[in-house]
Image (cartoon, rainbow, N blue to C red):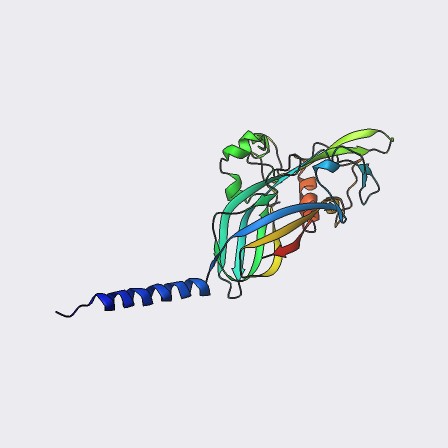
Amino acid sequence: MKNLFPFLILAVSLMTCSEDNDDNLNPEISTTFTFTHNWDGAIVSNTNFNAIQYTNANGELLSIERLRYVISDIKFTSNNNEMTELDVYNLVDVTNANNLSFTPETTIPAGSYTVSFTFGLDNEDNSENYLDLNSESFNVPDMLGGGYHYMQFDGKFINSSATEQGFNYHAIRATDNPGMNPTFPQDTFFTVNLGIIEITNDINIEIEMNIAEWFKNPNLWDLNVLNQMLMPNSLAQIMMYENGQNVFSLGDVIQ
């Protein structure tokens, strides 16, 4: 019998090279999302909190004392409309500088994608039980439909009487008829589209939040009128949803 060992080695070597080439042609990419915050271009971090120094579009001076929010369901949609959805969520806690960078475990193939995510939690996700969000006291009372906040944004402002007053700009699922059988007039989570990104290597995608936009457009926000007890106010929640469409944008992309 002829010695087949050299031929086996050659065959295995060729197969391995072929597999390596395939991997190089279609590598799996790790994505990282970094969340930054600004007030009409001025950088905001927790070092800027607890000082009345910002002016909203309605002319009210205010401070930021707490800011945290959830993003979820990151989606990558290719040019031929094939979608990869990452069933994940991240609680961005600016107050404590936690989770300002988020790297999902799932990798994606290299390619050109429209990248988007959900602000808050869609209704299906909002009905689940998250131990980490529970421990952060991020829950919404059952009488308001249960689930979780989308955002908690707290601070103080100078009211029309020139007095310092607190505000709680909390975004949740819009709810009517608080109590045993609440109803939901419309969805108030929303999709943020970051546009088309060419992804070739491990990538860091910056997501910018312009905090000032929560008070601007299309609804000019009057803190003297809308400052607290906004969670059971479905009209206020819908206004937040509308203003939120302009809050997020794509920042630097590094790969």
